[in-house]
Amino acid sequence: MTPKPFAPTEEQRAVIDHEGSAFVDACPGAGKTRILIERARELFGALRQGQGIAFLSFTHAAVFELETRLSQERLLPAPIFPNFIGTFDSFVWHFLVAPFGLPGATVRPRLIADTAGLPVEPYENAQTLPLSCFCPDTGAIFPAEAKSKGFDVSKKQDYQVQAYETTASRIRERLLARGHLGFDEARSVALQRISDTQIARRIALALKGRFCEVIVDEAQDCNPDDLRIIAWLRDSGLPTKVVCDPNQAIYEFRGGVTDHLSTFAETFPAAQRKKVTGNFRSSPNICKAVAGFRPIPVRGDPDEALGSLRGHSASVEILSYGGISVPPSIGETFSTILRGAGILPSSAPIVASTKASGAAASGQPKATGSQDRTLRLAEVVSEFQFAAGYSDMKKAMDSAHELFLLLEGKLGGLSYHQYIADNDIDPASWRSQVVKLLRTLRFSLGVHGDARGWHGAVKQVLERELSIDDGQTISQKLRWNTNLEGLLADAPTDTPLPRTIHSVKGMQFPAVCVVMTSRTLGRILDFLLTGEPADQAENARKLYVAASRAEKLLVLAVPRSQALRLKTHLEAQGASVNVREI
Ligand SMILES: Nc1ncnc2c1ncn2[C@@H]1O[C@H](COP(=O)(O)OP(=O)(O)OP(=O)(O)O)[C@@H](O)[C@H]1O
Image (cartoon, rainbow, N blue to C red; front, side):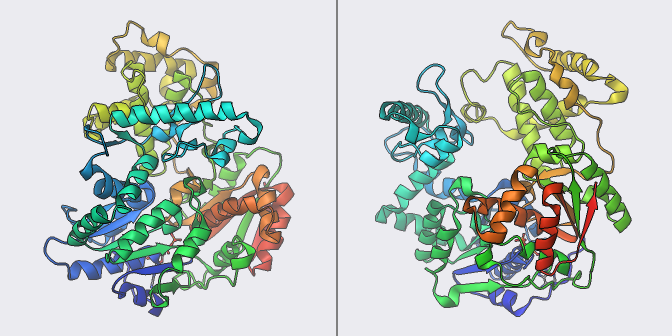
């Protein structure tokens, strides 16, 4: 792909040329990633021998996107060292935790990705809560997180809460004894380290030796602890660029809160606070509609369309659907609109908050989230077959690997990631075999006929390919389940694929169809029109992120009860809107 010629605006140039630390706040499509790439180009041209740049973001999908953009610009050095590109969590792990071991422990520390989900069950048949509901420092329960899992602390006796806290602390002690740390625990160790002046100074010196600049992208997803670490990097004299759009914060579950971000922004002197305005991605109608999804206090005027689509006049399309469930006619109508607009359906995703809504809108099998192994196998095979990008594909491969290990009886009482860490298993050692199996297990109407046919065939394949030596047969492990019938479908041809909002962050597509459900849109519109209920702020931001991925065409599939309300709201922002009944 030939990179587009780039002529930065004055605001963009001010960031690209800025030496030292800065806080950069910009709207969707303002060129944050682009600026970062141009900054990298400048720095790479002047790097001292042995020095590199650290690029950090908050999800594997965002890091993958950044890597892709850097490599398209031929800026991704090989080998990467001494540069670093990865998630904030992996940076914390590599530079603040792993090299120093754990206080009082002799075992090598290991980062275990799934400890947050380990079940805390103080007594038999008690409701289980994930370990993430308990503070890694004090062991105290997080009431809000527990409530979101259906455990209302205010309605429990003290002794019940204490039983949970004691069990959670014991689980953490056992993990620590093996050297196993989750992301929360690792961050807690990192914070202890940087609060020790002597150690902090030594680490800072090492980091300044290796990196000339740290660039933190998508910083709206920082939680307050992340911000403390970033502030420490900056205050240690390491030039630190923090790039964000506070309106795109959609990781509240990580504790990311936009108020903390604005307080943090104020700790930068005025000359280091930069704003970048204007949208190079989207057409004017899309910019206007997107502005309508910002909360009232920061709505302001729509962002000016500055890119090649500034003259593009296609209306925003609302697909108004009846009933309470998301119908497959959304995907069919979206495909028709795309063909009419000359846009390849496979280049335009159906974006929804959950996988289930996206699958329903595109007429794909709906995941049940069941723990039944046969259903899990069918789901993981479908996920791989319908994956809309590398990060979806990787997730499906990991889930399949976990399921195969489970079928082989290898996991014992360990979580998947504990097993991988304990046995030092490198993804390269299993990935090609898992991909081959996933391809072989793919459902095909022509080959299998129906779900029964598929079930018989996969048992034969897995009996041959897996090494099960716990005395059980594959038929005992993969029993027939009648729900299998709704879970299998033929591979898609040229159709729009469903993606979750979290997986499309930072990306852009010629067209996007955003699916809203009757359960959420009414309350989001209440929030956008009145500021209440305030708990809809994050859902409104998700809508903002999803809609702002669109370049030429924005389609919003919404329940009939809200279609005219949404149309009126978007027209009030100046957008031209067309409603179609489906
Ligand atoms: N000065 C410019 N001239 C032309 N195109 C530009 C310019 N700046 C950015 N772009 C293009 O605009 C599009 C959006 O840029 P980019 O993805 O960097 O925005 P962003 O601020 O990171 O967006 P978001 O936060 O919404 O993900 C890209 O295609 C980019 O190449």
